[in-house]
Length: 161
Image (cartoon, rainbow, N blue to C red; front, side, top):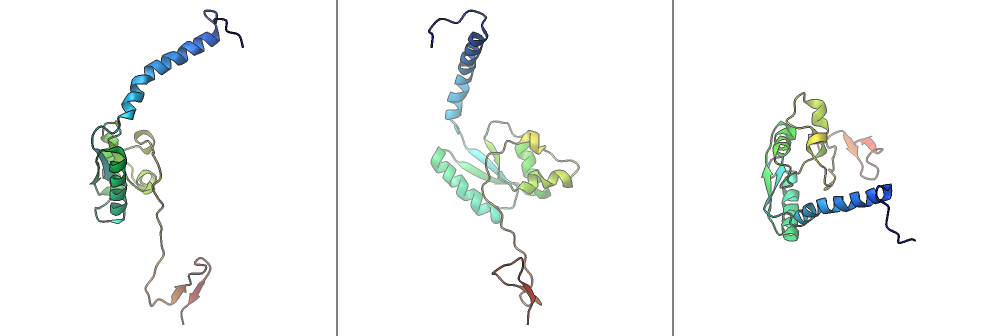
């Protein structure tokens, strides 16, 4: 490998100078990101307090508080199939201090169900992570004439005696 200086105007020299300028420009942002969070963070939950999401969001908020040193505060904003809470997050400053804790219905199904939403899921949100999965069950009255045996629920339908 040669140690000769790159000639002025060469494409390699321009790329190296551009990379150096990019690093210098991004430096202040990197130091600002390291300080996050510098104040409490709000976690908007578009469901009622006391419901299935409540315990989980509070546990996550406490873990984040312990790890990052700032409070993460659940804010329950119910209504309109999650659109009220999601709309509040979409209108919040894009600084990372307002998070949305929701299920995919709020961001996927509502687009197909409602003509006018206070948010656009593609434009207004940056997805962080999947927190869990939602177990759904099919149930009937305990004295129903149909029973599902637990060995193979999808194939073991039979009538009760």
